Amino acid sequence: MLEQVIYLAPSAFETAFMSLTHNEEDIDCTLQATDIAFASLIAQ
Image (spheres, rainbow, N blue to C red):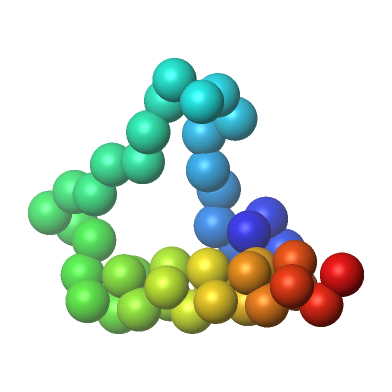
């Protein structure tokens, strides 16, 4: 996810938050980055 410029909390006790400043484009970029990250893990 870092390679896709998506920063996640390093702790299992933290969570991701959405805010009103996140728009549909931000969500789409995050979902696309997630797809890329999972595809990379599967390829390993």
